[in-house]
Image 1 (cartoon, rainbow, N blue to C red):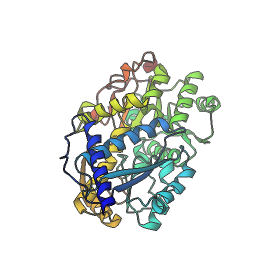
Image 2: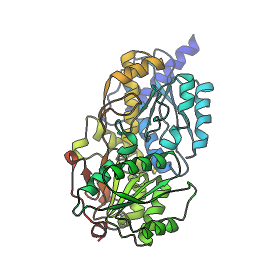
Image 3: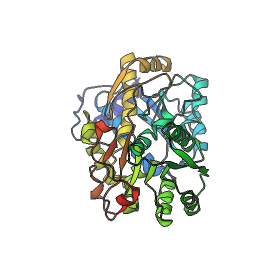
Length: 426
């Protein structure tokens, strides 16, 4: 009994010390004692490898959520303990990690994984065990399984595949004269395939002729031949879906071969990471891209600015993305959804949590959302931006949205499209 008492005391004091380091977070009473052992929240994350620039941001956001919850008294009067492993940005590692989380670590709750290619391999295992998860970001990962205990923070809406390109093609269709042809390019993996499938549907529905439709292997490092092949088809539009390492290669190669089109862009995950922005600098000018969240003035919700301020202080000590405009808020929000479900059901039962999550709405640091049958948002919230007037490689120009104004949807516009692509590159 003494050992159990001492363990609870140590955990309680640790949470108080954590809270003391958080600006603006009220301290819980020193006399509080935890009701039981920690609630273990498990996930895998891209901490090394090609996705690390994003994964480390998400991890920092989740850690800030843990600290906030513990400072407020935990979940069910139990402290949150994060249990996670580095998947090394390799989807093949993810199923084994989740098996370990469940069989060895005995986690109570799951979030993640991050990204389509990592989520898809895990869903069958979750289905077998009847488990609930809130994936961080994924494109239509549940469109084949239709698993009712899967939820995702990507603001895709009921038609997730098409959502990654709808704004791109609507912007193109609004130009006069309307462009006619499009080249489609994507990573040969779940993410790229789903995004390009949706882009193909959008292009055909809006009257564009597809003149190039190819994928590239995940191992591709030299994109110059790929972009020369794209250029040879003389398209008006080029839409690409790429993860961070591919993003850099495609953007550099497009400039190297002198890509001359009316619009260039797509779902470039890498362009949402500040270190990649500062690396590419003016090479990004003119690119029109998909973004799941950007803290424009109309998209600041209760707690958003405070989270970004605290994240940026942490980022300065960890050497990670200094701004964290997109991924830390999404990681934090995923955990907010899970925590609300636990608090309202007063349960860690995965069936009860999923049932609640399908019926409830959730107010988070990235806005309010509810979930449909496949765990996608009931209303789409995706946005498209354009890089404009980027000069040099300095960081300050990426603070705010002056060089990355939102163009679509119209109700969130903070700038106007510079068209064609050549004009935006000047």
